[in-house]
Image (cartoon, rainbow, N blue to C red):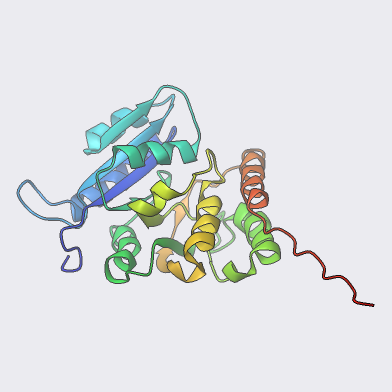
Length: 248
């Protein structure tokens, strides 16, 4: 709170058909981090972008106390994030996924902390353990099978990023306004690669969020996500260095 120094912090939650878990996500932030009228809290506003949901996502978000931006039809996660940025008034923006169960206020505190105390940090990624089918680890199949291998091959300076596709992310507003966000699920990797290219790998911070549990999707739903992640990476792959001519 002392480091906040008058800056505004917005929490943005892109959501599509997440009525079952969204209330817990919103309430965990509002109950602990947003001050009552006249007070000062770490978070100044919570915005949910309802990306064309067919369930009661928007109604649940409003009932929980969030500001809701509704889109009539799905436009993709990246476009939902852009809509949240346009609506938000914060100097610093924290993004949370809407399908997380057991989200705690420390997610936001830890994500925004490096931005408040470290001027050279412009993007913060969360990392965590991901349970899968009753086992303590094993989640994050697109991360392990697509994102990390392509980073190792094409972007080796970023191999220490533990969760490159983490939806739990925080960034400075000017950074989000300067880069082009991928429209769909490639948005997280695209943002990471663009920030590293423009501001350098050292501008990316990481924070331990503990355990992150969410609904694990079947493979037929993960394939389109994996494709979009791959497309985002290939669109940003470094240009090959031309071989120097043999003087002989």
